Length: 206
Image (cartoon, rainbow, N blue to C red; front, side, top):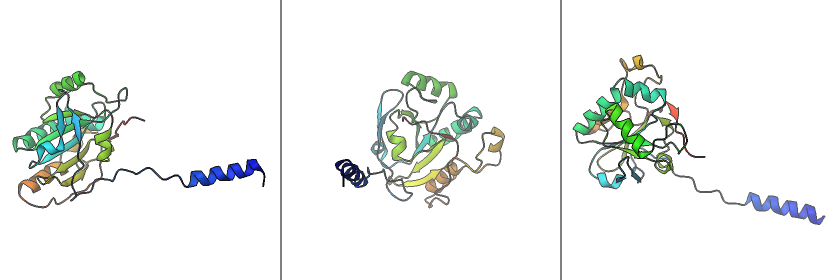
């Protein structure tokens, strides 16, 4: 066997035994929600651990996404946010768009967007590295998660059962997040813990 051929075969064998990089485990309902730390639009560091003993909603958003606009321009998202936070729920809106990607918001722009839309969330997290989004396997905007008071994931998926961008679809829609919060408030298991998220893709780096 020639030296060149032996070298090629050795290279192929070496590549075939390169270990795969470990993948992040997908979040699972009933299991502890992935821990995270991120800064909000005001520069304050927020961690899931800060809200131990509270119900937490995570909402992935992108201001330019028509599916997000459906909920914000109609006022439906703000109404749900304010209703939830009025009940003591912590509501964290997350922007995981990478810098220069569609939907990215620098801190000042994020604060302006919140004010313009009269958002009722507790805080808006700027996750430009995508670390929080990838930990939760957030794929769309909106993509919704509810964490119960014990820190376990109680709901993950779409915001409602109408996967279209038309605001008229809100009429008669079943809001899964609202239903999950009602179940937790009543001390019940969430009746529909997992649904399919819909919307625009999260604009991660890379």
